[in-house]
Image (cartoon, rainbow, N blue to C red; front, side, top):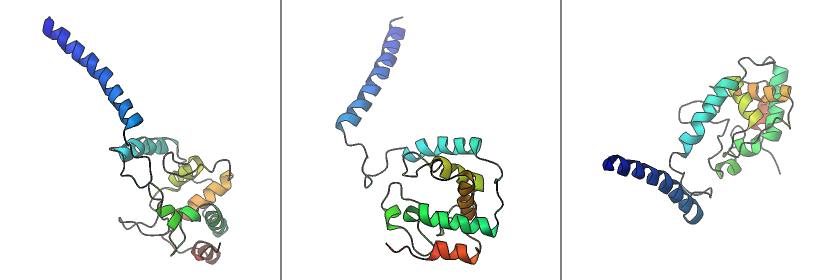
Length: 179
């Protein structure tokens, strides 16, 4: 009986001590809050797992508009105006995006897995990300800035980042922005 009581008290003490230690760490420690800090242990997993689950559950399965030349050109102009400062242009990666944490993916460059940007993602996944944004990454929600057609236009454009684009779209995503 005594050992059961000690065991239960140990569990209760552990349940009280762990939150207290977490509080002390966050209040007086040096948790990683600056962009230059190393990532918090399990930070990527804590964010990535629920994000992917939610996108899979909520993303549209089919685009609401066709990937026509007209829509790709419109998407390229939207991208240039709204996205390029963080995600870069073809041949012109964003220094601003590289200074963020986590670093902003450059959507016109091949990544280490050989894929250009998010061209291997379904357009509905990109649409969800652009519409809703992603917390703790700097990726804003565009649902109050762009209408549904515009959200699809930029999403379809990014799904074709590894393919030839109409000339006007190619120019919009390649020509450096002069400030």
